[in-house]
Length: 449
Image (tube, rainbow, N blue to C red):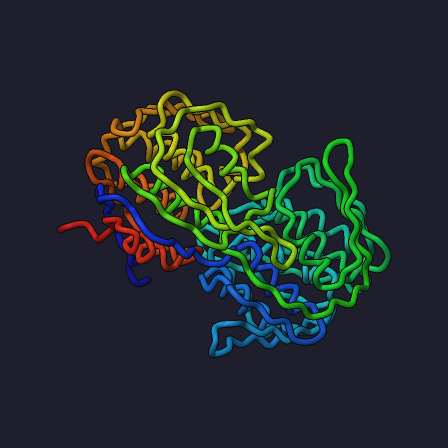
């Protein structure tokens, strides 16, 4: 008989003003890519600021099983001694990616043009996330897959022994699919051309240049096309991982909602394709100041100063979704405390994240007294103003870290406390979330028995 699953409920109550500096962890997207590209380079790559959360650590372990040497120095930096493009070894164990769709999909791409067989699995959430969207285009390189019906994990991947270059249009707004194809192209002869109709986050392209890949990007009528020269030889790089804007969104949101608050978020990634939330909040009347803006490792970063604000509801352009897809749960919470209606569309992708986030957010907001209309691809939220959300509910998180953190933020501004059924999954992306929030003055603790 299986051991009973351990859950860790938490409850959030209204605190006094939030003050101080919130040093959120390193960016998850960049951390995954730094480990994978470091493993594909010849020589030693040094990474500072790596996110040491479960999702990223699972990717590191997968790279070890494929032959890369990965160690952590005493000073907290990481070193990756790579195998070279096409140099991955046959793994003698299953590659388990836990909760991480990014890790699983990108490593599929990295392996698709190397003649080894690997078995992929993950937790119950990841085993229900769609992989067909990456399996089908990777087959064009010559890779073969054996997966559950519908293309779900667990699956077996055998990389192409004689890979071929491809031309492919990614017709869904997915940086993971695009990145998987770019990684596969590195070991295919000739040029591969990957086009996308929506401009998704471009960390893979930026990092490929830093590692010495021959890559060109051209604008097209509908988006852009990326061309990669195959049979590449990547050189090691020094990667400084900026702080994650998706993690920063939670203390930022709390500071906007809790009266009298002012916090600083230093060294946050400000890549233009990741600032959709900041652009939207500015339109909603949020007091967020960008200071000390600069560039490091090909990425824009800066400090954010956030002060309590009275937000107003707006209609968010659907085309902005790729620049803030992970931030919609916490944005929906902010919209609940805004004055007026907020309309969010173009969010079909949220139905196939760690949970059906559209449904999860809608049920959670309804439980704390907010009227929500759930659309096929979005939400319409009737804001109740800064002091109008009742709370007093226990929220189902569906094993989704972003739902968990979003409703713990909500509980800091509702009339009555808000609890969540489980917080264990928060460690997949933000292992220090509760401690950071409490350091700012938040009241988050296990519910009284």
